[in-house]
Each structure stands twice: as C-alpha cells, then as structure tokens.
Length: 76
Length: 321
Picture 1 (cartoon, rainbow over the protein chains, first blue to last red):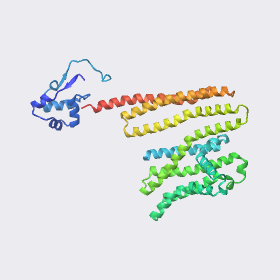
Picture 2: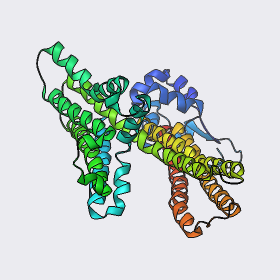
Picture 3: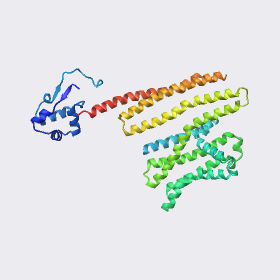
Picture 4: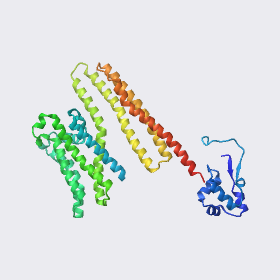
C-alpha cells in the first residue's frame, strides 16, 4: 500500500501512548497494531475523525502518500 | 450430529420409504426398485445363511447368528431398564422395533415358514412382502430420529437414539455399496454362464476387466461423497475460511476427474462389448447420465468463484479500522 499511516509523531506531540488513544477512539489494540503496521486495507471516516479529534491534528498529519506506483487490490 | 442434520436424515429415509411403497404398488415392474431398499436385510440374511451353512433351522450356528443380529437392538434398552428400574417410552419403542427387526431377519432367511403358498406362486407378492417388512423397520427408525430432532429428550434416551443413527448409517452404507454388489453379482453371473464354453478363459478375463472398469468411477463417486460431507462440515464451522475454499476447489477438480472417468469407463465398456460381439450400449443414455454430473461440476466452480469473492470482501472488512 502506497498510503502510509504515521501516528508516532502526533502521539509524541500529545504525550500520549497508543493504548490511551485506543481507549479514547474506541478501537481495540489489535486494530491499532494493524493500523500502525500498515496492514490495514481501509479506515472509516468516523475512526479517522476520532483519531484527528483526540490527537488535535488533520488527516494529512497522519496519512501520507509515498509516491510509488498505483497498486490495485487484486495485485496486493 | 445436530437436530437439523438428524431431521434431514429422517426426511431422506422417509422419502425412501414412500418411494418404495408407491413403486411397489403402482407397477409390478418397479418392484425390483422397491426390493432395493430391502437390500440390507437381504444381505444380512445371505450372510447368516452363508456362515450358518444353509437354513438356520438345521444348524445351531445359524440360530446363534440370528439371535445375535436379530436381538442386538434390544441390548441397550434392556441394560437401561435394569439400571434405571423403569421403562421409558423410547425403551418400549426399541423393544417393539427389536421384535419387528428379528421377524424381518427371520422372514428374509426363511420366508416359507411365515407366508402362505400364494406368495411363492406369485413372486411379485413375495417381493412386496419382503420390501414391506424392511420398510416397517425403517419407519421405526424414522420416528425415533424425528423424536430426537423435535423434542428435548433426556440424556439416557439420547443415548438410545444413537442406536437409530447407527442403524440409519448402516442402511446408507449398504445402499451405497449395493451398486458395487450388483456389479459384482452381474460379473459373476456372466462368468458362470460362459464357463465350459470354448475360449472361456479369455471371455472371463474380459468380464473381469469390464467389471473393474465399471467399478472404478463408482469407487471415485463414493470418495467424492465423503469429500462433500467434509465440505458441509467445514461450511458449518467457518463459512468464510480459506480451508473451505481449498476443499471446494479440490471437490470441483475431483468431479471433473469423475466426469472423465465416467466417460472413459463408458467408452471402454462399449469397446469391450464390441470386441465380445455383443449389442453396443446407446450413446444417448450415457450422455443423459453424465449431464447432471457435468452441471454439478460447473455449479461447484460457480460456487467457488462466489466464495472467493466473499472471502476477499470478508478479509478486507476485517482489515478496515
């Protein structure tokens, strides 16, 4: 996946652990691990909304595009 | 076995019984089909006769075998009654079943002891009587299975119903393997009919080859049915698992192989019949027989593609945060 999720910087900025973020957003630690490891296939707007709200940032701060070629679901 | 599967088994046995009764009464020519369902009793009686060396009434071994096979269903209810010191409804049911089962077996071994002479003059009547008594025993098993699937029964009675399942399983196995038996019997009859003729050795060899060719797809068919059972079990366990996909894929390949085997077997049988200068089989009938098999193979492929898509959607959904 060419879309990268980077929560570390924002967590550091807010002095928050990923466990605390899980509790605030309402997702399991297993799902948080999938998200941080880049294995996630999709993210709901509601989840993104909650993460941005609690980390006080915008989606562009945690999501980035690495500029590599476009990969379809089938290719993955 | 869960309640739903038990009920399905009861329905299958019920339909079998109804079809047999109808076919026995509608036309005399269909009696052979009705007789087919009495085959478990026929085979058991033949076995007793074989080991007992003939008529049971002249031989103590025959009597012992009749007692062992005939009274076997009464073992558990008797132990249960002695242990519990009370007779439950299902125990009575089993005792009545044992009496009918014993009579059925006795009847199959020695029908002339029970039936009047008219039945032996008209062979159709004898076949109807034989099938009727076999079906009566089936009906008892069906009622027990329906009881198990519809009512909450206690632990002891639940154990007793296992008996019904065992007997139903034996009937199913015997019905499946009766095809093999019929093939073997025909081959032996054909071999016996040519014994003593000129060049009989080559004809016997030809018949043996013909029998092996006839049996091969049948054996593969039996294995395919076991594969189908494992697919159903896997479906009940995890309907979106990779394991189910693998099993359906393997079954679908197996069915395609089976089609090739059936076609090959038909072709070889025709060639062998041509070599032995007999009337060749109609090609149309063979095509008709294979069509449902071909359709089921494509249906499996279709199910497989749906399942693959469903599994990929499920995986994607699982990885959506």
